[in-house]
Amino acid sequence: GLLVRRFFPRYGFHDGRIIKLRRRQIFDQKKGTDRPVLVYRVLYNDGDEEDFMHHEINSLMQIYDRRNIDSRAAPSLQIIPGTLYETQQNGIVKIVKHTTALGAATRGEGGIVHMEFCQLGHPWTDLMLELTKLQLSIVRKLQYGESIVSCPAGKMGCTN
Image (cartoon, rainbow, N blue to C red; front, side, top):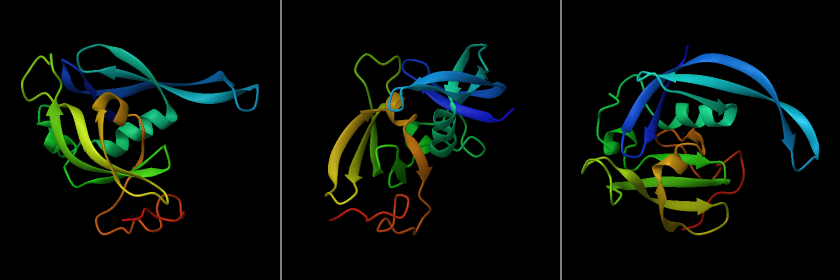
């Protein structure tokens, strides 16, 4: 199955593989009806298992370079400062730096991401977010040199 990576507070980054895909019905609150969704079962290298919806798997695939970066590498190598991502909140984040949360198991664990955030048509703002939340809210990684004037999804870009 496809390789994915996820950050766990106090345990760091762990790799796993998608071992099962199944269709499930969930209640869509906006439409007031049930709708089918794909649920992915991930088996981590330590034996734990977890289920994800399609958009969460996509986010993990976009944010982490599982092929070229070892899962034991520092957070600043996992999600490199300066990288831009489109978010599910119709905005762009630019990674600034990583810090470790108080009470973390190891000093360089990470877990807190400092970034600049811009929703379309609004100025950039400084933001701190737990990596556990960021890693499941990414739509795609912007390519180097890609203009954010037309992102996301062809809408008007951020202001300076």
